[in-house]
Length: 521
Image (tube, rainbow, N blue to C red; front, side, top):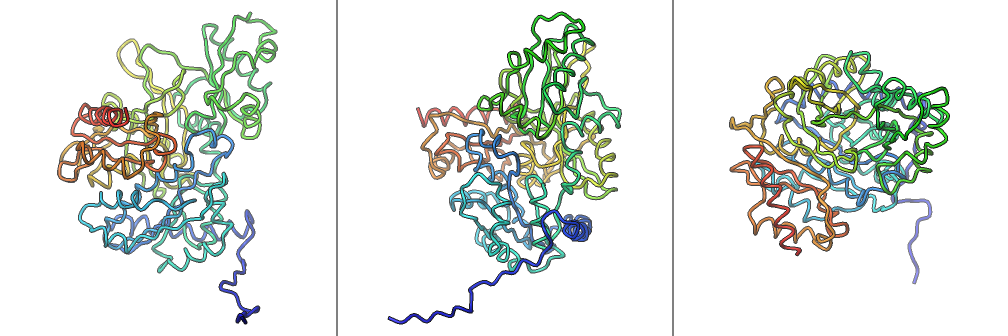
């Protein structure tokens, strides 16, 4: 049988004439395209009926060796599925790229949450693309390795002037992808990465006159760490613990706790701390060895700071959005839920933060946002705090880090924002829905139990509907699930439990756990 084969013709002839990765030309094209995001933010973002296309790349472009220690990390790409709620805007198109295809059951679940839009109408404006690649590389790297996929994305873009790219975090990989797609990126140029590192954040807090734990930044070696630990101990002989943090750690997995042994505070203190450092340092992530910790610390550099003690402590955060140098928003405050032996691991969040100090957090956030906006920072970021109640009953807030990216409090807030169509009032620390009602939520993306292993997305939705905990658009209360894809293999999922009072939101959370335990018992 003869085959008609044309050796001089290809289904796809790709010639990458774009600038080299990390080159001056790439940076110049990126800067040129970024002018477009300012115009979009001012004219398109506020207009619910404007035509736009949003390209969503939920890549966790972080240290892969550390990220691999998080169970079901590949499924964290599902956290930005909250942005499918943009499809409630009738002229918005969404292009969502993932490492592996996402289940239609999960996509249908999110589209079911849309208010005033049919699933069919939304589906026509949604394109789901996949790399079909389960490797440990960041999703953005996988896309860059697939020129045909990049070309498919470009062909789906009707108007570049109303299209932008949004990502979980931004590195040179995301910058390069934005240039190849020839569209702007809503976020900060990764050349400013240092501003969002642990060391850079301490310098920003110092410049803004904001309280922070005593410590040192720009450390690299074990000797640097020992020197800082010795300085802190000499300054406060009663100090029992200190925290050692990698500059680019996330969710507490780049942290370690140092417990001071009984040592004389003399000229040999630094030497003695160094010689016993391994005996008294414990990594927060149980699967991260000391050897790996120090290797990564040397690569990233990092900080040492005192471990703040207190009979009553909270871990609040404030989210900020810089749209332009003159346009700053404070969309939310949270009280974060931290776990682990020393409270270093992010588990979830309560929204809004306690009214006793929510407005103070907003004021600090605004001050930092104004400072960073003058440096060219753009997009969404968060500031984390440790807050300690003082003897007079007031709270003192110590800023501990800046995350120039989306984080654990981003997707829960986006869900309530899209579902309730309301606004957080930073002046009084309340969230008011479009219908004038207050709403609160209790959220976690670390609900995990071996009993849940084997539950499929279909099973979860059946259980939620049968027991009446699914989010109800008419009452604007109920439970929204995420990380659904991680449930069957890892017994892990996320919940955003929305209620008319903080107590009711927490009751939705507790009730859902009881239901899952009952169904899997």
